[in-house]
Length: 243
Image 1 (cartoon, rainbow, N blue to C red):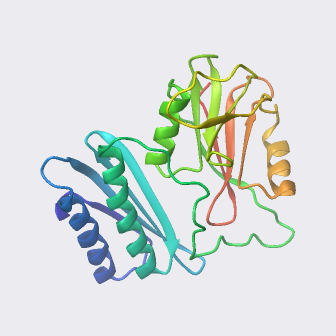
Image 2 (image 1 turned 90 degrees about the horizontal axis):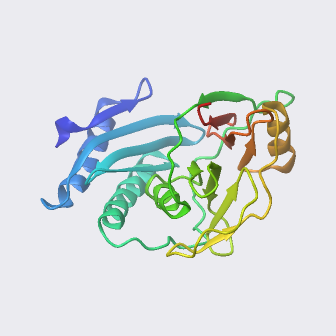
């Protein structure tokens, strides 16, 4: 199992730390048993303020999962291995809504951007958005440890997001206002308004001024959905569906 794990780490991390990370993740995968196929394991270790960002990606019985934790190395590895064990159990069993509100994550803080500079978009992802129901999008969000997930809603044929927020823990927002989806097993609340149409600069300004963790908005011309989010380095990332 160890040879099947890819490890990507920041320069200068001691070999024994890489070996420990590989061994502990391999042990969790092996403990899943012969009836559960855990493959395509990838570990990423990235230096952040006050410690390390530990991220694990895998496929469990063909379903992609992701976990990430930021803290000092030992604590981050403890938390990410325990979260991996729990996530494997969750995706191979009957789905259930995750608890809300979530316990606050302790550990490494987000790097502060130098005064006067302000955060800026340093990474843009342009995936082909998956067409799926809001329920399916919610399950993907949980499996991948996202706070917000961008997809295309077949009911409206427009882009939408699900994200974690009270009172139920799950909320749906769309680029166009529409009726609520049919009731299912996910306790979704619905944002009644269409996503605002903003330029990238306007979206950055709104996120920063309101101190938001992320912002869902629509391209001012195409109307395609976009998500602006905060990174651990203090800057911003942008997810934009392919035109």
